Length: 444
Image 1 (spheres, one colour):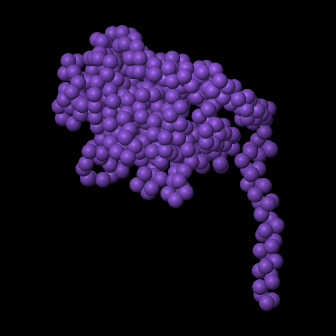
Image 2 (image 1 turned 90 degrees about the vertical axis):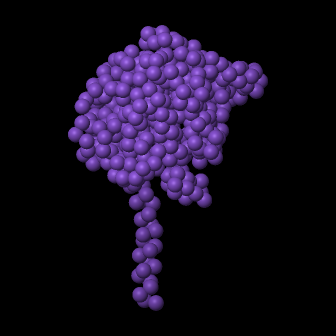
Image 3 (image 1 turned 180 degrees about the horizontal axis):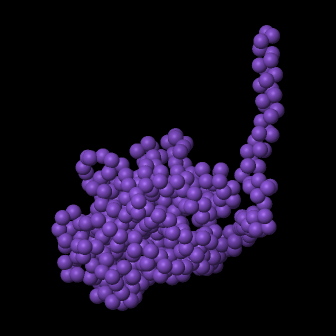
């Protein structure tokens, strides 16, 4: 009895200390008082006021949205607006072909590999590729253009982020098509003209990786019909969420390089010879940095918590597509409203954040099966160029400047470039981004 009493007292003592320990852990999220400067204090106030203001105005936005949708004919107007998306894309591609001095192309082609690649440069056009995800029945929209018969140049595949679509890369697509590169930009599942599955599990990390590899396979098959061989090399260029997927594709490529087996997916991963990632934090570094290095990063990421809620984020986006697009001044003001006018697309876009939050949960609690989880991060063997805006309002620069490059991107030509831009650096600094990518692609 005497030996158990001290243990009980010790346990009760630990219980009394738990609230204090929890408070210390919570306080550790904020910078230490010794590091506070006027600039840090201003930044902290701004970061605290942003979600507070959003929370205060959200009921009014939602209320106005409900009135718009159900009393003022908003649902009908949104359906009509969403139906114009294919027409808007076709018109945009025609303007891009003219800007790039490329011949006019058919509005769209099928998923087959029968393209007029041998005829040389061709205008921008849409095609639709089956993702191979038989359970979700996903079809991926891809814009292609340029010279698919240029055997000396790699295929440049661009992948967008949230809440955009393929058109976020318009400035890069036209620039590189003019230089004779074969170029392509895909709509990830849930965005643009690609299918938008409604279940969160459809957005598990491996599904997103498989989509990119599937697109690479089809595009390489198309190039092979023109240049022979296996279709040549691929440079993957991605931003924001596309960049996060790009990192996971790179881990797949690293695994493929380490293994000597074959198979279509392995060959697709091995075909990626370079990687350009814009405003895309390394998956293994984000949580570590946000909790231990830059305590403000958690405040910058407040919207990720909001996106976990059911229905409200969709209503916030879908109730007034034009308002949502205007709130994102860097976005495509022509295509984005038509995209979010489709409520299913809004859910698909938001499911990226919901699936990421469930990544480590067991399947019984909504997490993905082991085969659908992200690969364990591996050192990327190919050259990686990371582009980042110094004024990124969502992601601190330390996410890239403090990343252990020798550990994760050990190739001697891997590097980081900081630009005087925001999170949307390919819009802010189109010329600088194009030149940085071109130099990187041309390096031997």
